[in-house]
View 1 (spheres, rainbow, N blue to C red):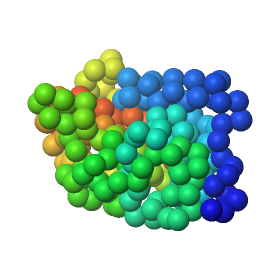
View 2 (view 1 turned 180 degrees about the horizontal axis):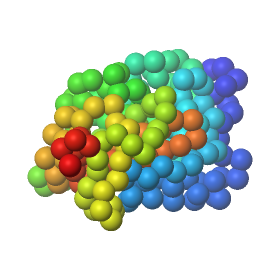
View 3 (view 1 turned 135 degrees about the vertical axis):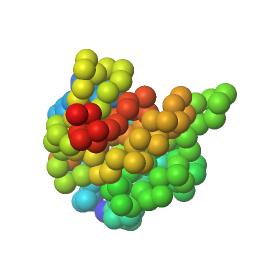
View 4 (view 1 turned 90 degrees about the vertical axis):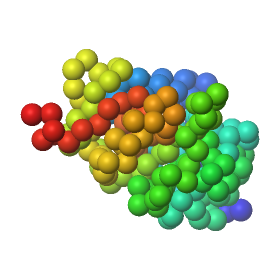
Length: 193
């Protein structure tokens, strides 16, 4: 285990975790809005926002999938020391961390069952930037329409069609997060005109 694994937890755990949990809830409750979330520091390439989400939402009973460049010995050590979450394959994950490309095909992640729709995965998608333009979002938590830069349209449209089943998403970049729950309808800006 390297030294980086031993650092990166919250400095003031109760307060930092409460602020981070509030930002995580707000992001899913208001799709298309971008929030600041800070406090977690993890080995590269994990962003501060993603590290903070993992510290806030995961524990030793939360199966976590690491994909692509986020599946490194350093990140595994950090998770083992800071969180204790078991690292699993996509089909067993409650949470997953990686880039959009690394998550393909997203159909490998659990979408819940008719009896237990909550037994689905939440994907933390690391991005270079987050912007409030691009795909048009409508649905619960959105007054009229919102926009968010998404890596694709069709997979999110197909995901919304599965509701109440489906995946939930957090998009992270630096210290920013945005959420996209399965209940959000996604369309191309051209489709709404």
